[in-house]
Amino acid sequence: MKILLINGSPHETGAVARALLECESTMRLLGAEIDNYFIGTAPHSCCTACGCCKDGRGCVFGDIGELYKKCKDADGFVIGTPTHYFGASGTLISMLSRLFYSGIDAFRYKPVAVIGVGRRGGAFDAALEIEKFFRFSSSPIISGIYPAILYAKDGASAEYDSEGLQNMRSTARNLVWLSKCIGLGREYGVSLPIEEERIKTDISSLKEI
Ligand SMILES: Cc1cc2nc3c(=O)[nH]c(=O)nc-3n(C[C@H](O)[C@H](O)[C@H](O)COP(=O)(O)O)c2cc1C
Image (cartoon, rainbow, N blue to C red; front, side):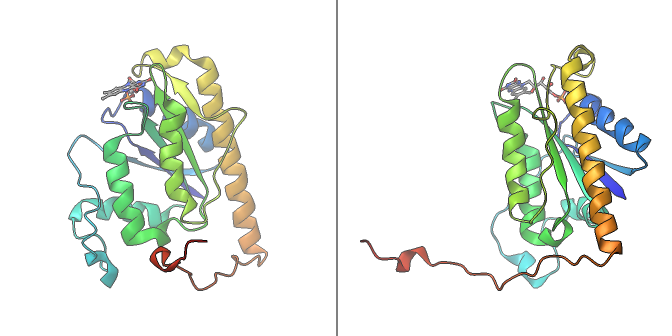
């Protein structure tokens, strides 16, 4: 079972990295294989709705190819976002928008845990903003003994939030547990749910009562 950790912060060794490290050590102890991706500091466009990806050749911007491959290869995800103005990292949102629009198959039915890290307030809102993507891909969203949030301003201060670090460990354990259940289910022939042909209501055709 391979779990991909995505660090959605501009800091490679900041508070989000520290929270992810807590998840990583917990999951390694439970036998998970770990892969990592750091989104970095380069600017990334949001989805421009150009529609070029509809021919199946991926996003017209070449910057998400490596991340897409890692997502496709993973069985589950831990995604860490810093809190920026009570919301998630804009860069992470920009990249996920294009990943989901051009390659949602890389995420379907794979469990995800989203962790939010902030100095003072809004970390839960930040995590929810990222979780919402996974409500389009039938992905089980992992909970813990408390929402997976940690309070810190940087990597060093993250050590002081021992409750936050415990939240990371409990969430990580639950992700491994569910991933194992899904893997065993697959081995024993439990098939994925059937998918109906997609209905898209044309709102402009709805009548007023
Ligand atoms: C542009 C910006 C906006 C921020 N807004 C918030 C905020 O609304 N609430 C909060 O608690 N922390 C906020 N912070 C602080 C970061 O969330 C906090 O320092 C976090 O630990 C950073 O994680 P990192 O070290 O992995 O980047 C903000 C930081 C930046 C750079």
